[in-house]
Length: 268
Image (tube, rainbow, N blue to C red; front, side, top):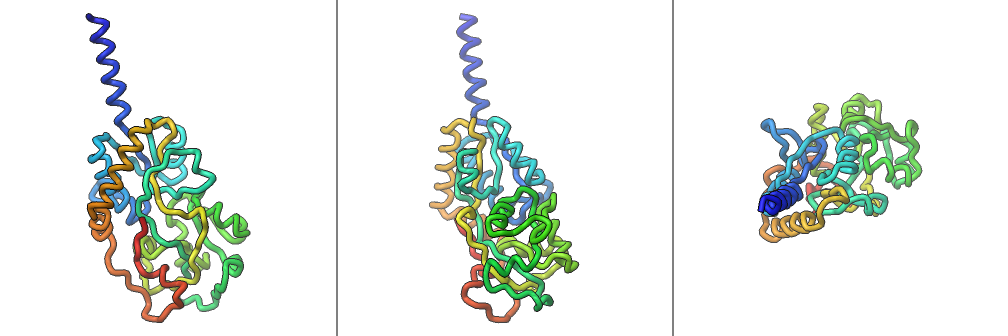
């Protein structure tokens, strides 16, 4: 009888542990960031609700992107968000989502009228900054950008924005959803920048939760069902609207191909 009790106890412990997830993310407002001494944001809130619905005990830690991604790559029962899903990463994780994302664009300072971009090739005439090991590094390399020449890498998200403000970078990468927070960190206003090009690439297919491949597929399925439920009930829209206000850029008219860079539309 004692052996039976021990066996049952161990099974309960294993089952409980299997329903725990350690999630990692970076400071990337309004998707995920520190607010009121806790990790909040559009995708952080969505995953918090999804974990609750799925009855999964999720803890979230905020780290620089490289560390967050590596942690989820090596730790059992872990994951990282908000993560772009592409062919290179496809078989490295179990994917849940999509979460919320937005169209990616290049922006210049309004005062930099010397910057003229007509196509992706002309982008290489200028410099841009990105986070180290970010998905955009591979995208830019595929388009012929060279590290140290066309793009520079930084250890922290949007660290390049301050350099951009000082005119030491020609362009920044952002979206109409994230741009207000991105610029605000460097004391730049929305009306101080102008979109010049929308970055379209097959590897930029939204933000996801990427789970370590050791994660129980049942947990992944429960989270996916919970996210689908949040979309169906309109809670996605409610969470998005609580973080995204009216986006105000310059009143100057833009060509139609650049409207996605200013329309504030969230994709999911």
